[in-house]
Image (tube, rainbow, N blue to C red):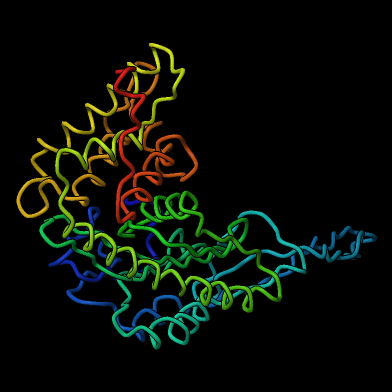
Length: 354
């Protein structure tokens, strides 16, 4: 069984012809072509969850063949979370009286109000309940971006997730097609890495906080569009031999008093990136020898060409994804250099060092 999809769970996954069927094929998750309709999404997430106070029942004893109360009933002040449409306990621990149930339909309503109405191109890609309704999600398809001459496609998404009992209300930008709890966790990890993830507790003002975060995330849409424009501009800027040398010297600089080991390491890095830039099969055609190809060469090097005996590749991925690692900073520096109209020339002293 797919992660988190229980018998009473339901969901809808859209764009199956374009983006693929669910890997699990669970019949509880309907698969359709095109986007998920707002009303259908709302129906999936429209199920009642209530707090039911936990009570220690009274005990009885028999006195002269008459049953009398031995100990009165006690109200605990703690509550269980019950899905009342099927009388299913969805959390096997208790919550306090301050715990506020945030209906998941409010997430849909706020997405409609602040995202789908303001940005008609944005659609619902998938939605569903998980773990018998303890958790649920809405995944928005924000944009599908292509760069001229590059066959690869970047898909941007926005996830909203609501969990009851030990789980939080979450939202964040990511790139994963959510069809189960495993993929929801992947989206959560990506959102955490790119610093768009927010987790909110189930308090009485949760609705206002969710609404404000949705508004804040809307600013990402303009940033994504600007990034795509920038990448398309890089395709139009060719790089000759001198441009490549200037760029690599600025990306992996040598100091005047650099030691032999440093010179060797950074010279080798330059050579590896230049080889990817010139020879990689994916960087040919219309993007060959452009600033866009150079940006891709640097990110490819950071992600795949820095693996050592102590780094099996997973560390490289995390170092790039978290935005603060050495590899991530190399990518950021490359992007800043490629934004310049004129690349800085190779320092004169390097001719004596190399």
